[in-house]
Amino acid sequence: MEKVLDIVPLRSLVAVADRGGFQRAATHLHLSQAAVSQHVRRLEAATGRRLVERDGRRSRFTTDGTHLLGYARRILALHDESLRTFGVEAGEVIVIGSTEHAAAQLLPLLTAALERSLPDHRVRYRLDRGTALREALSTGRIDLALLLGAADDPRATPVGELELTWYAAEGWSRPAGPVPVVAFDSPCALRTAALETLARHRIPAEMGAEANQLAGVHAATAAGLGVAALATLGTTPEGLVHRGDLPPPPPLPLTLWRRQDLDPAVTWHATTSLRDLLATPLARGA
Image (cartoon, rainbow, N blue to C red; front, side):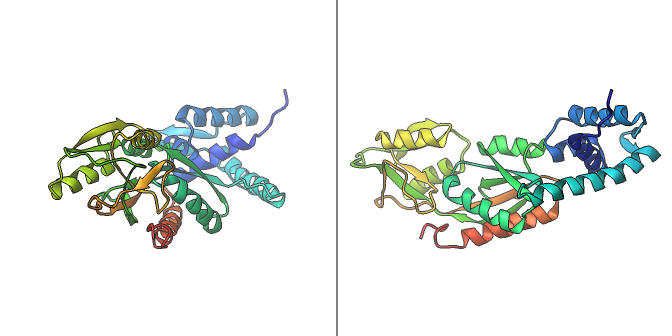
């Protein structure tokens, strides 16, 4: 049987060395730990040598493993250079989680900015609720998370603010009684901001409709079920109109959360790009 050193297992081997273990390598590569272990076993089967040994809770490269590691780095460098020569990017993937608020406007701009500042990386997004994104961050399924609301956490960095605007269906009339509010299910920073703003101005309010996705919030608002406070970066959602007869909610802080062992250079470029984008009139909704 022909023995082959495949690129994917070699990349896993290098990640084990660079990240200091199988679990961290799996997190970095967005694979399971079992998959990384299987990759190393495939290399051991191909070479007929033991490459990595367990030393308590740590992993230690054998002499043969260290030799192969040097070859692996050279093979991967030549492999990636060959792809770049033909216009194919072979760089690492940065997975960024974001809530849906303003994603249509902000994320394409962020992608373009990161492609300029990190040309050897590819960007992939995961849109979800804030609680799910925090869990994905802690388990290493995403590298960065863009979340609404202030955060007292060493992994979180403020990058700007998002203006909130009231929207309703065209022709919607404000009722004489409590104002019906359309919002995400709790917990939600936008929901809290909307209700607290009305309460602060002594305007009675009640929940008119709840949804677990932005499309549901838009649909319920367009159906005339109430008003919604949304962060849209100056773009009015289809089927809705701006309502200027309610007190505007204060801007919400936007924070960038990072995975614990993420490359500091990636965090810096993402933070700088977001701050630059949010400082523009478009991002402020001007």
